[in-house]
Image (tube, rainbow, N blue to C red; front, top):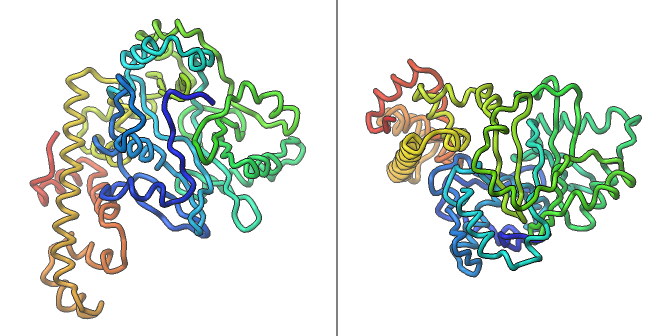
Length: 412
């Protein structure tokens, strides 16, 4: 449970809300009995970079940056107390400065005398190509959730664990043990049918990939717990391979990993410092690399939070170009949300829905008409505008027409 990164103590939703104030890409979504905090889009400053050289965990900037990384599906009960703490946000190796091999190696060398950190070493695990799933305790029973809560995918996982008692895997008892000890077990749901991503898995499965303390955010060592997991509950878990610390010197060339086929890649963990490496086979099949030549697909990737996979697999000039494009799209969205709110707040003040429809509507442009009742109904305008752009940038012709309507939309 040692960690390079000091994860924030989170007990209630108030420990998080202050950090997302003024960042409209983060949303608090009310579900039945609980709230979800997640991010809608990953802009250049959504997750502030952390300076590892030197690392100072005592500043408010560090605390806020680390709390924002937790806003990736963290959940709170309606009484405000934390209910589940899935993975924090981590990045592809080389995607950004604070996930670079250079900075990590420098940090390790400076802390070489810290035996407590170095004893754990570097751990590699398979990056499974499924859907992240975790349990949440509600109304004296457990439900399974994805990042955004109870969804079709999590319901499919529930059906899986209850459909075949002959497997002798007591997931529910394991969920209870974790809940009683304030831990969140994190799984990957693999499905060869309806919920397949890219990799072909032969059978359906729900595999434990991590176990997290809900309050302090630390990750438990699955390798140490494997005998307990297998003997007590027969819980399938992801394999973790201990790597010699000297392997860090070999990580500058990932040709062997990137050349692999049939898998997505690997997650590396050095005492809480996590980073991922995906292979070219997977990226190609996920249509990320092909998207580089089509601007409308780049826009979709930015708005779908998938641009990070591109950034880690292009040269420096292309990476800078894409980052700048992402920043400009971010600015476009923020500027239009401000303009929409200022104008619409003024024209709808003290008016009924009927008056808005009959008197105000004819004076508004297309976007304003689409958004006016969203505002009245208390919808998040940032989320609604992102959805509008995605809908109108779904194909080359549509995107060209969209840019004619909005000539201030940035160009790649």
